[in-house]
Structures are given as structure tokens and as C-alpha cells.
Amino acid sequence: MTPVRVATYNIWHDAGPWPRRLPLIRREIERVQPDVLGLQEVLRTLDDGPATPGTCQALAIAAGTGYHVAYAPAAPRHGGPVWQGNAVLSRWPIREQRAFPLPGADVAEPRTLLYALVEAPHGDLPVFVTHLAWEPQHGPLRQRQAAFIAEQVAALAPAAVLLGDFNAEPDSAEMKTLIDAGFTDAWTSEAAGCTFDQANDYAREADEPSCRIDYVLAWGTTAADARLVFTEPDRDGGTTVWPSDHFGVLAEMRPPLSG
Image 1: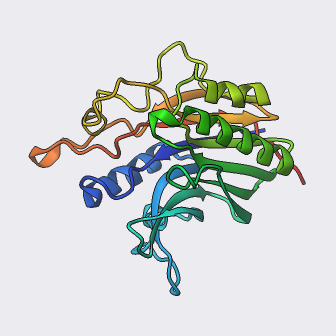
Image 2: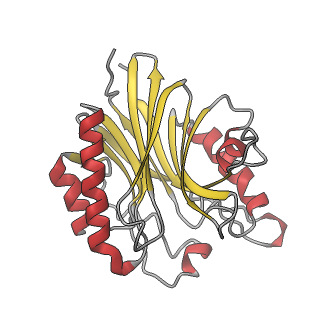
């Protein structure tokens, strides 16, 4: 059975030079050809009109590619109609989607778990995308969020892929919560695999050490051969532009299929 190429990427909402960052993201998607891509920090205007590439970053990224899009809002920006959330881009139709608010909206920025059931060629592929609380002091909250996610995945799918920015390093209590629950990390290389890296000019502005906080996790199946993607900037025009302040992760997985 042909492996499914799955990837995760935090697009850094519309920060920095978004009009120049957008084509870099699209170019890398064309290069690495993921079957399923989970996105975090995606902006969409929520109003009475239909979402369009002009009102949704996920649709702008997917425009003209044939990817199907699912979106889950998490938090409004500045109290207005624009929300930030998670998205799935899929080569195949998305038959079902649901959003689950994560614990902690009373003490931190609201976060969500997006579930999308993808109609892959050999059967249904359950995909989950999330983004945990970012503040350093919220480690215990991230543990609660991780435990909640494990419960939702177990209730919905005997096998699945979980994609996201967990704001936690591999040896953290937060990631141990997920590993102990039965998830496996697709990153098997001895390389550090930093996804928030001082080599990236935008990440360096945060004055934080390089670390791996973005993951492809498998549930009830296997995913391996993970590698970094979205790592190359555009140095034309006299300025260096990176696709985001994060790097992404791409992995191949044995399809956890049903039906």
C-alpha cells in the first residue's frame, strides 16, 4: 500500500511580509507534494458570506491546487470578525469535520482540536490538527490539553494521524502524556530536527533557543521518515523572507484506513 505523505506547518498567521510569504508556502507545497497538510495559526474572516481565498489563509494557500480544505476557528483577533485557528488541506475529499475547544480558554488564548475524516483512496483517514498553549508557564495546561486530545482521538478513531504545534519539546511532560497514551513520534532521526530555529530570522527575534515543537504523531498505525520542510527563504529583492517563523515536518505513514 502506498504510504500517505502527511505534514504539519505553523504559518505564523499574517505576521511579517505575508504577501511575500504566501507564494513561498505554496511553492514548498508544490515541491514536497503532501497528501495531507495540517496548518496552525490560520486566519479566516467569520461572517455571513462564504469563505474565499481573500478571507481565509488556508483557501489562499490551496487556491488552484485542488486541495480540499477544513477549518476550525479557535480565537478571535482583537474582538473582530477575523479568527485564528487550525486547518487541513487534503488531496482527497473531506467527508466529515468537527472542532473541539481545548481546555484552558479561561486562563490562556483559546485553542482547538480539528478533526477531519479524509476519503483517501484505500479508505477513510482520520486526521487531527491542533495547537497547544504557547506561554512557558502553561506547561500544566498543555498537559491537560494533551490528555484531552488523547481522549478525543481514542473516542473517534482506532487509528489516525495527529499534526500540530505542541509548544513542547520531545522530552517534556506534555509530550510524555501523548506518548504514554499511545501516540508515536514520526521523528526517528538522531538530528535535533528543530522546527523553531535560530537559523530562521523570524524565530531569532523571539530570543529563544532552537527547539523541536512541531510534530507528526501516529495513533494505532506507523509514521516514519520524518524530515524538515519549509526551511528555505527567498533572498531575492535585497531582503530575506522566510515562509514562516517555524519550519514544518513531513513524514510518510502507513494509512490508518477503514471502510
